[in-house]
Amino acid sequence: MNRAPVLMILASFLFATMGLCVKYASAYYDTGEIVFYRGLVGAALMALLTWRQRGTLRTAVPAMHFWRSLSGVAALCMWFYAIGNLPLATAMTLNYMSSVWMALFLLGGAILLGGARLDPRVVAAVLTGFAGVALILRPTIEQDQLWHGVVGLLSGMLSATAYLQVTALGRAGEPEYRIVFYFSLGGMTAGLLAMLAGGSHPHTLAGIGWLLAVGTFATVAQLMMTRAYGTGKPLVNASLQYLGIVFAFIYGVVLFDDPVTWMALAGMLLIVLAGLAATFLRSKAAPNVAPSTTTET
Image (tube, rainbow, N blue to C red; front, side, top):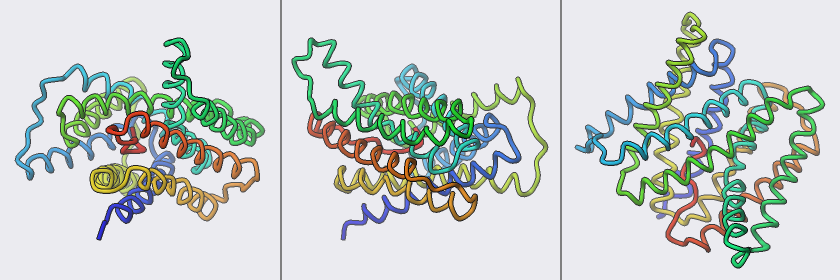
């Protein structure tokens, strides 16, 4: 029995739950603090996993890890900021735009090459995705939260860049646990700098609980998703990955009384369709490269 679909559904649920914990933690801490402790928990868990697997954290490509961590941590900071200030499902959906951004990068590359390989299906996927963004951001604009929406959108763009760098690291022979460890280390560094610049908040039992939950759920979900992509069909996994938006939507409505508007729902649907189309076209163009294996950059 192939367990990949089950792992993918569980990973999507845990990522949505992580977003829920980030939203609760935002009442106690700034974004930089949450990123720091998410990185601390993730680095500790990955170091333990490396030790259990008798692996090593030594790397021959430190520069590649640096640039991957720089883009990935920047995307993570923006995403956590958006989660703390937008409806949960909105922030999650804008981050899922990463597949559409990757299609846009492919489109830009085709244009630079003279349009010889320009695929109209890629153009349609990109336009569909941005139509979804326009519908999602419309309620945001009405609530004077445009800035938060733009930050969430940029998190998806930077996530796409980070995914490309993760692919390059995989081709260089770097194992997943090492990539995730250095990403977590980068989060710790960025979070610490933010805390030194802006200060930190005193801890409470509730706050510590939310921080531990963020780091644990994120790391476990990342490992589950990686295992699912390693054993299952990429397009099936990519489809199930979007269940994270559904879970986040349910959390938002039930726990935060987030408004349900037809524009937001239509926008989410368009982004999901555009993301699936972009993933399909990317897999056809590069069949040996799996779709993004994490929603957390």
